[in-house]
Length: 321
Image 1: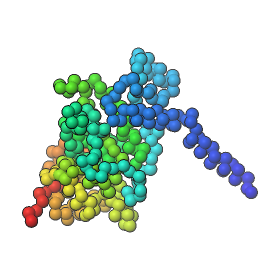
Image 2: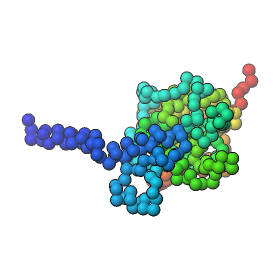
Image 3: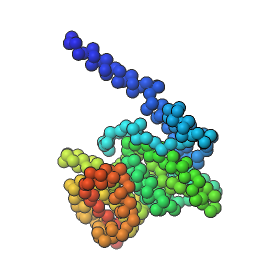
Image 4: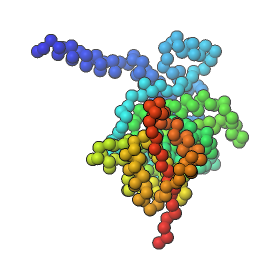
């Protein structure tokens, strides 16, 4: 046995012990966030249920010197480690309704529940597919204050990050301008996220012609040719998007990969139910402006002075039989 083997084994064991150490900062932070998420994800925030963020005692006292009640901090990405990509064909053990009418949207948008029916008083009309860390939704929320916006993300910890981010934003904006009827703040109440696989289950969530806008922002390029079938835009998937998108609705695409941009344009051009909108239309559309700058990937591309390729398509009427 070589002299290096015990050292190597010890290093692996030490790394595992550190990861599973109940006293580690990361584990304590995630446990607190998980508790808050379970309590607050589907309800209006109650100050008495909020657990303080996992900060060092000295830092927590400093931040809350003049604030007696606990605070919900914006989540920190370093505690939500996750691979950049996920295989959409794997069995991710996802929860989804058998049909759209069985989906309880009130759990995600409690501020919009009609007390007489116990259900939300409007439909989700904007979907951000593969929403990542939620930047687009957060910027769309004040731009479309009366519209419900849903993010779909397949990665577990990224989804949890977005959930915690929305919870914190709702809390921090609880004193924002209130609704005239309910006298309660509606800031960021119109956005939420679910863990889901749009390539498999989109029609399980949305009725025919329900959506008005669908966003595909910096999707996984799947560079290898044998993995092109996993791209989010294909002939088959476009027919499903056309089913849930209303006539006149818009598909928004943006990527920094020219090959993927050309792939999406080619398939959308070939589909009979979509028509590309002009560059002039894109320049005046506020969603395109938001989409270019709001996502994490978009900001990274801007920092690296890379290119962003945009293509927007309108849903055409169904042809007469």
